[in-house]
Image: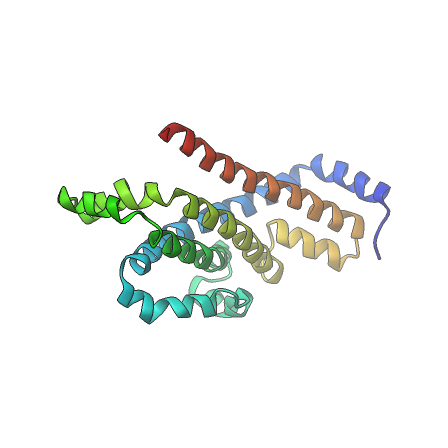
Length: 217
């Protein structure tokens, strides 16, 4: 049953006036930020390796394309066994979700780098670290930002799904609790607020990417 707009609006006001909601929002935000940071670093490293080595790409990149669209919730029981029922399993779920789009985006971006830049770096005997930080990453800022935006979206979904399955705190827990109690106005209110926050976070990441372009001009 879909509640009326008035009932949803009233629930949104009550939700935003509740201190409990902000506590659960902080829990989910912390899990998502940790997942995005870990998944982003792992995705960047794997993407650089795959994009810079055609043998590794031929051997492993196809597996990323196969596993990327797979619903990550099927791995959640394994993550629970490895990381327990606490925040670790939720963060791991977000990491697993965010890793694939970031790694694939970085790998594709590596292949689009101007070969002249790479030759210049090698001619100056730049180390691997210098090549990565001074040439590869700056030249791939657009693919990286796009990968992070995709990773943020799927990481959010993965973390929320994990919270609905096994948690006593977080936005996912509140949503499934409202659904169980058949409190539809509250459930829709949380979904709407979450949707707005997700759009804002995605726009912020895009804005940060735009600022990096301005600083480099």
